[in-house]
Amino acid sequence: MKFFATVREAVGKRSAEMEAANIRELLELLKRTYGKRFTDTVIDEETGELKRFYQCMVNGKRIELLDGYETELNDDDSVALFPPVGGG
Image 1: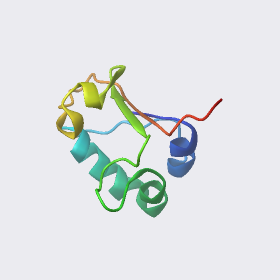
Image 2: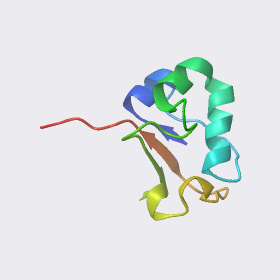
Image 3: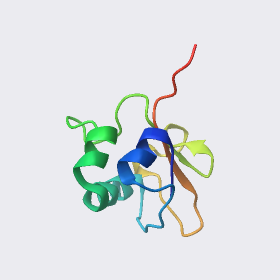
């Protein structure tokens, strides 16, 4: 699991190894592991899912193009969490 920008700041590290069956379970594990700072930064409190414009990718593909939060995870999968990207 790789963390970028504000997500990295919220967890205090660049990466972590975690085991979860799918993305929904992984987010729950991240909330329990990294607590309020992670949750406040990344999770929409109404939906329990990622805040608007945050991206989660599995093996370089956005979860929206896979099975969303039900995307199954395998031992060799690479998961990345990205905050919104600004620019102009």
